[in-house]
Image 1 (cartoon, rainbow, N blue to C red):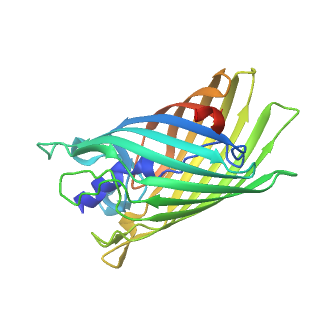
Image 2: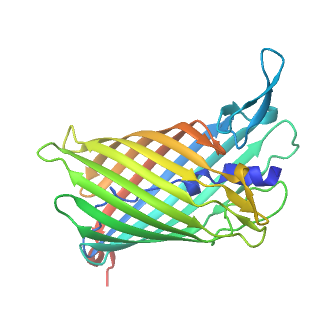
Image 3: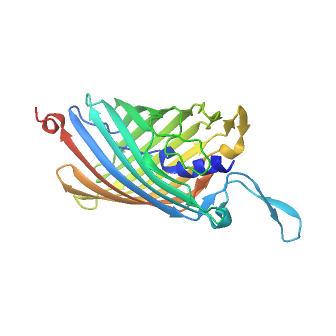
Length: 303
């Protein structure tokens, strides 16, 4: 059970919905878009995985609901750094394909341990395809994704695996619209993730709903400010064929974001991702920095 919970802690970035571009806007034909993002989190709190018994003021036994924000037991602390490398290529103006490769360096420690569980390395790869169905009166795009278990999964006590050991399948509907004549946009994504069984440990994470909503505004030609809401809302998972509420994962983040166009299509981005609620996830804030650029494929390949 302890190993199962440690595994849950380390996967918060991998399981969280991420957007390569502004939602429904696909990559133009013949254009290659690439981005590197750096995530960092250090926290001593989490959103609990199950109801917890507590002693009430009248000395009777009560319970604290699952999802309560609490310190880790035994003075626990969680540290994670992640780098996401991702890119999209426009096959047509309405269809593009993408690839995402994450790298993690993470550890968990508490007073019961002599050696802190830690692991680093490349995690599971995701591939995407998007099809913009129409662009008036707003953009509507259909996105599909597959997570391939390419990251190393170790089922050993005291280790935090960087991979999950199972395939996942995403289907996402993305709607976006420019708010011109205001220099602003709005976008909403709603998706569903089918999570299959890790046959090595007979664990099936619960399927998940994915939600992203964002609004952005350009107060200056090079400066964009945005406010994003990211949510992941999982169902109960199964372990050895039995439904287990403690495997339920949920998290909601509010992320004020600022980006600056350095020149051409090169953009630097900074965000503070603030957790506002969850279950079976680390609590606290994530700091994010990103650098992205777009080039014509003919310019990217010299021959």
